[in-house]
Length: 440
Image (cartoon, rainbow, N blue to C red; front, side, top):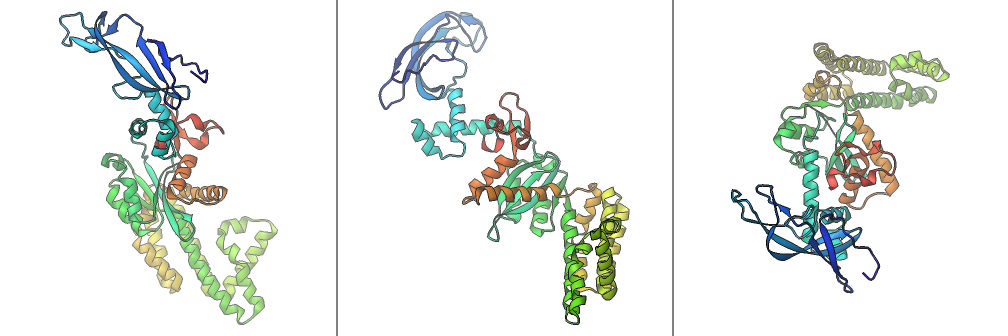
């Protein structure tokens, strides 16, 4: 060749006897088999009798150069009369019936990852259908290796692609610590889009699905995951109780600062102490702990309504602690008592909260049935996704956002051993040679 590239193929059963290199065209390498015998594909016995030859053109790759193999294929005659196949063509390892070798298809699949098929085909000078075939084969292999990778626990949560404009639903596996996939939107159609990627048998393996109190998610999960317990996430439940307490505190702050500026400051400064757990405030021996104890005492005594709201918050914390132990009967009784106390307090924020908890009663009880399953990992992913967006200064397309999140927080397959591990567990720089199922 003009570039001086060594075209010695790594085919032990081939001999190169001529190379044609025309300017602007793909190099043509003429090869032929060197072994005098071949195995019959039917009886798997050797034969040395030939009955003519033919030529086949196959696209192959030598290092990083795309070439055309012009193969001289011999026709062998099976020498055994009991064999049902009289003649057969000479076959070579890694070269099938198609127009591209397995090595070339793997090379095309790696180059096509994340790029347009038409542009890659033009750059390589090969038909587009070879690239589609290469990607399809890689996807089939990855699908077989990852069949059933939908684990026992599925976490569903939304994240923002662009704040207040575009949202996405993230599907994660807390037990493996990876992102399974992402879907556009934050409604039932996003869950349907994800679920239809799996068979009914694969979806039936899911036993626990944790979500926030979002009705479209609950409706879709009930329909598409028949054996799964829908669990209301504990973090979102605590946050709803915290929002109700904050609303009561703000009303007290506005009411008391109209009377006295000095007393109004108490209800503003106590906001951090009210959010902390009571036992943590009492066990805090620092100056901060002493100050928060004084502020909580003053605020709850000045405004009895705020005192009742604070006790309701602590009662809910005690009920959730029971649920985390897995005692379903005691948790049901504690939850019903908390709802009754909220309604009896006649505090508008907690009355609304009680109605919400009544509508999600079974999903909240499932928190104890599942042994304390939560969406903590999914919430941690939201923080990691935000950090990734800041590094990229945002994403203009959905494909770019989904691809980056899956590549950063997804799973990869070792092409040599088939081992499947989270990408984040690999040393920096080692993930480039691994295969990711979503892009295979």
